[in-house]
Amino acid sequence: MIDPALKIIYQEADNGYLGLSYEPFLKKTIMHIEFKKWNLAECRRYREIWKIIKKNLVASGITELHSLCKSEKEVKFNKFWGFKDTGVIAQVEDCYMYILKLEL
Image 1: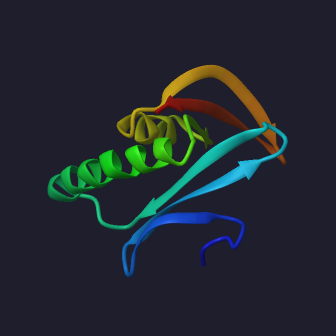
Image 2: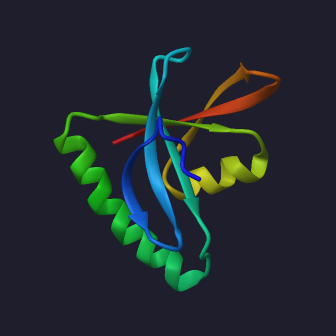
Image 3: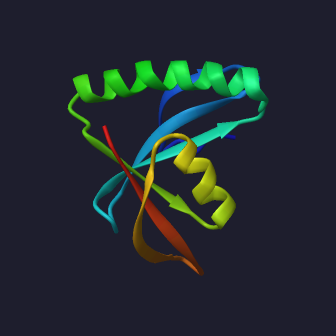
C-alpha cells in the first residue's frame, strides 16, 4: 500500500511508483521509489522516464531532491538515479539513514 502522504508523480499499475514527500525534520523534499521489475531493458526504460520526470520537476520549481537510505545497497540504488552522498547521516526513529542529494 502506498503511503497517503506521498505525492505520486509516476505510477505503473502492477509494477510500482515514484513519489515525493516533504520531511519536516530535514526541511527537504524526499524521493520515494518502489518498482518490482528490474532487468537491463527495464532500467533503460526507467532512465528515459526519469529524464522526463526531472524536466517536469524543474518546470514546477523543484530544483533538488533528497533520499534517505538505510543501507549501502540503497545508497548504490539511489546513485543509479544520479543522487550523490552528502556525508550526512540522520537518526530517523530507531535507525540511522544516509542522506543523499540530487540537484536537478
